[in-house]
Length: 249
Image 1 (cartoon, rainbow, N blue to C red):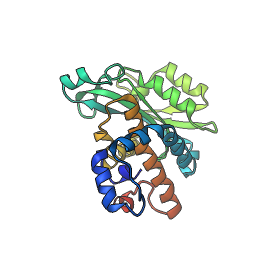
Image 2: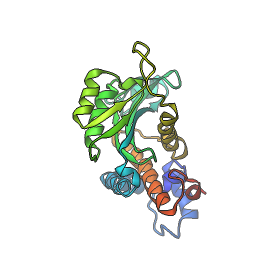
Image 3: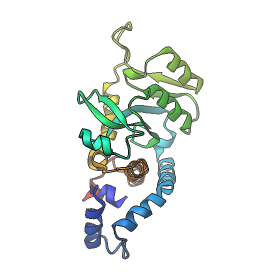
């Protein structure tokens, strides 16, 4: 969590900085190989802690849910793609917001409006985002009657019926070939983009540096554990939910 909130994606650089600035908190820091192995062993614990912090946030009981996905690039060159240990799981996908292709994964997520992570999943960019959304919704702790806000990609009668079968309702803008304009969701949709931006830019997920699938999972969990902990603490202190400046300084 300290590595994520300090915005240092490199393990080597973080350990060097921590030795100077955080020695009072961590008197016995491991070397880089030991740090790597320890994080690998604690991956399931990171996921458990993420759930604990998320459950303590008011967003855990919000009946308004935001669903979306974002690219998680893992290589920039063809040579890196060819040699990558992620080649069996990663794939090429299209990033509409940047109008470019990428190689890697898509991170699908359901958030509460305050940014509380309710469910996360990495998948191939080729996987239908509606299929993943249904899996995430089924995993969420729900009381029934939730409203699921998504973009135009979450269209389709079969998908809407599947969401209804989970006692929720999908709300999205209308597609061009559909009558009417649908609800104006841009202000709310910008919120989930902002949540992803917090994780990818401030918490450096965009520069994760993972070379294996377990390593990528650890780094995703690391960032969202940090976000969930900050949101929960901010609620307790009466601060804006995703105000991280007090922890980054």
